[in-house]
View 1: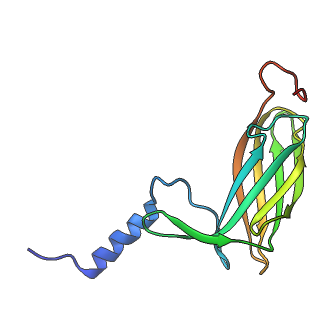
View 2: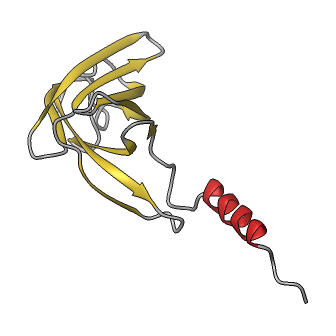
View 3: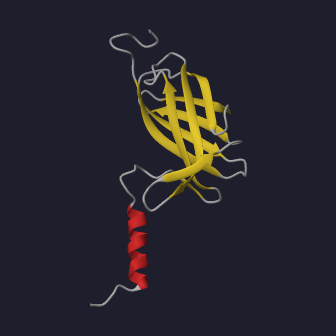
Length: 151
């Protein structure tokens, strides 16, 4: 029986790496800074319209392995901005996030003017000038049967 060639083993490993794993979507690639991973956390956990919401963005420089695991360190000294858009009715909110602990960027004054499915774009500029974006969708809705802005 003939053993596989080194070329076919390399091609197989590349295909495995390209397919990824069930660990979720890979973070945005950044040509000069490697891979940047951003995770968003809101307080309250389910943001409400017409009220101040806190947003904390954790930014890490990440290294992805073939097994789909992430190892990395906090990305300190970055410039982090949020742009949130709502298609219908057209609305936009933006905020500059301040760094607290290394790699933790936040604002506690994020007010969504209305309920709906918002597209959040977090723009990250590393201290070395390299840039990347993280995009996700967030549903903002009123609590229970209350009107927007009531607690």
